[in-house]
Image (cartoon, rainbow, N blue to C red; front, side, top):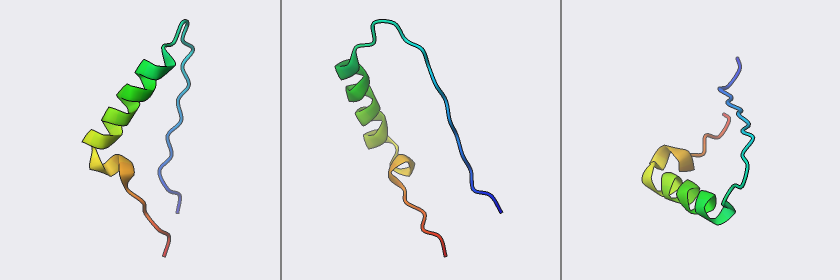
Amino acid sequence: EVGSHFFVEFSVERLDIQLFQNAWQRLIERHDILRAVVRDG
């Protein structure tokens, strides 16, 4: 059996790191599943 995997890359010019980090954190806070931990066994 193989678990689910997802990988993506973006090339971005003039990325505002702080704005990106804030948006990413809000996304994680809003969606519980993004904080889920699935243990094997």
